[in-house]
Amino acid sequence: MSHFKLCLNASTIMTTDIMTQIDIAEKTGFTAIELWFDHIDTFVNEGKGSVADI
Image (tube, rainbow, N blue to C red; front, side):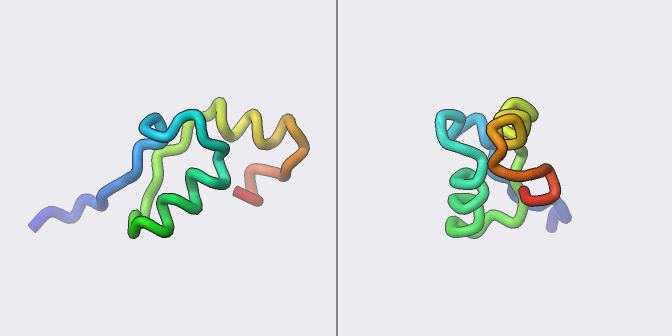
């Protein structure tokens, strides 16, 4: 059996904000998510929080 975890590729829900992406990943049972830098950068630059908040 593989030791790889399934990961949600955020590009599949690219138009969704980063916190919603994380919420979707959690609610659908993913234990990992591939975040995009642009989403992280937007979150921080819009004053919604820091990288640590994500």
